[in-house]
Length: 486
Image (cartoon, rainbow, N blue to C red; front, side, top):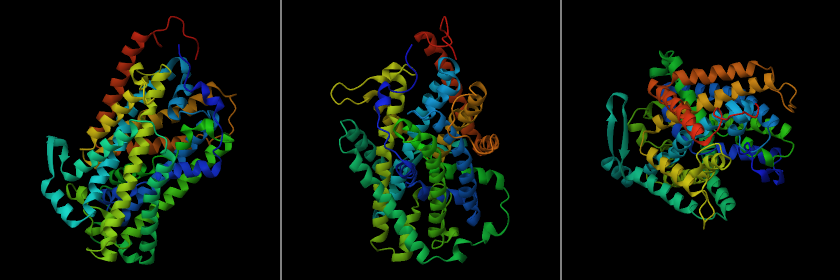
C-alpha cells in the first residue's frame, strides 16, 4: 500500500513563506477578472444596491469557512490542501481513502469548469476591443440548445473561438518544460492589478452616490424572491472569492504554519472582500445599474469595464480597448496558472495510489504529467462553450458537498477522534463558526437550480461507485484482508 499524501521530499522543502508572502499568494490567486464578469449576473439576481449584499454575506461565509481552513492548515501543515485534510480527518487507511478519491473525482469536474470561466470571460471581454469586432461577434454567434427546458446549450462564435484558441495556446505552452513561470506569472497579474487600480482611481474620483445607490424601478421595494436571489448572488461572489485558502496547498513551505496560515487566510479574506465591494461601487457609481443587461444572451455580450471606460472617455477612445486588453491578459494568466496547478492534483493523487494510475504517467522528454494535463485541458476546452452563469453554478455546487462541507465534518470528527493532537490554532468560538459555515454552504447549495443540485449528487454517487470498482480491482480499502488502522 502506498504512503499517504505528501511527497517524501516534502521534508526537504524550504519554509520561505512568511505572513506577507502567504497573504500575497492568496490575494494574487483570488484577484482576477471574476469580479468584473459577475457583477451584471448579480444584478440579475438582486436589483440595484441589493446586489452588494451578495459580496457582504458571502464575505461573512468566507471568514467562517476561513476559520475551518485555518485550523486544518495549522493542525495538518503539509502540502495538498483539501486532499490531505480529508484523508487525515476520516482516516488515511479507511474512509479517508474514499473521501480523498471523491475530492479528486469532483475536482476533475469543478477544476476545468473554473478554468473555463476564464476562457468564457475572454470571449465576453473581447467585444470591448473594438465596435467592429463586437458587431461581427454578435452577428456570427449562435447558441444551440440540447436541453431547451433547462435553457442549457452551447454557444459558438468568433469570441468563443478566440477563447478556445487561447486555451489551446496555453496547452501548447504547458506541454513543455516551464523555466520562466515566475516571471510570466508576475506579468499576468500586473494586468489585472493595473485594471483594478485604474478603475478604482477613475471610479472614486467621479463617484456619484445617487447612481450607485439608486433605489428606483425594481429596487424601489424589497425584492419578492429575496432569499433565492441572495443565494444566487452569494454563489457568484464565492466564485470570485475562491482562493482565500491557497496557502494550505503549500503548507510544507510555510514558516511557523500554526500562526502564518490562519493569519494569512483571515487577512486575505478581509482584503478581497473590501476590494471587491470597492470595485463594485466604483463602476456602478458611474454606470447606472438599470442600463446593465442581466439576462441571456445580452449579459454574455456585455463588458462592464469597457462600458465604464466608454462613459468616462468616450466610445471611440483608447480606454475601453486598453482595459479590455488588460483583462484578457489577466484571464490568460489566470487560466495558465490554474491549468498548471490543477493538472498536478490528479497526478499527485495517482502517484501515491489514491487515484487512477494512468494519470501518474510522466512524459519521457518533457518530464510533465502529460496525461493529467491533457485530461484537465480537454475538459476545460469543452466547458468553454457553455453559458457563464451555468458554468459558475455547476462548479460551486459540485464542490460544496465533498470539499467544503466535507472539511467542516472533518474538522469536527478530527477533534473527537484525536483530541490530544497538537493544534497550534483552534477555531474561535468553536463550534459556532462550523455551524454558521455549514448553514451558509447549505443555503447556497439549495438556492441553486435543481439541475445543478441533481448534477452534483449524480457525480458524487457515480464517484462512490467508481471508487468501489477501482478499490476492488486494486485491492484497496474496504477490500483489504487486514486493514492497518484508522
